[in-house]
Image (tube, rainbow, N blue to C red; front, side, top):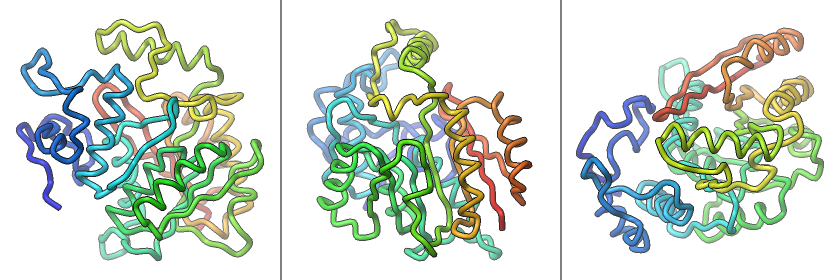
Length: 303
């Protein structure tokens, strides 16, 4: 499939070099791919075609077009109010994970033998869609929300993606337990944990984002959507990732690399200390950046 043209190649140089979204979006090509996007596109203050990223419907239409054009996802939709994540940042995680899994010959491993567990895959199923298309990896996505599970399965079935499956996590307190089967092995796990500890904290974070972008917002303007379990949990990211580290010990023989996004670098020393306690043999922190947003991947192994 032909890749969209780029008019300014240095627009998003922070993204991974293999990320297909480093340049300006080619809106004419994207609109041709998904015509419904056209009604949301207009010239911005720089004279470039763009959308209002504060408008949830516009963001959703853009995602549909990006997934269709770049990743050959013909049919994609999510229930109203569920997380509609920014594609470039999600693709970056996949590419950095591929670098982490690079073999001794310096080549990124590809093919269905590379098996990835996506914790909390969500209604959007984004990581499996991109990882399966870019590297032909096989994926298992876990999810607690039955509506999100149905949505993810609908996307998989509509696009005949045999390399992706979804499993229900029946426990709200477990992460790997109940999802990884006895004797089953994974090349890596990945996770975009709920960053906030409450709905109020989530709304405050959204309000700060709009202020940084020079726009007005009251915190309730969640342009990327997101149900409670997708945005926050008791104890927030700190408790969630700490639980993940503790649980990973029991599955040290099932998984080569455990990984998770980390929103705040100030929390890293806490995670490092916990990983030392559980005797992880190797720990890596991989920085990522998209525009004004900076995050990182925390990776650890017992191998």
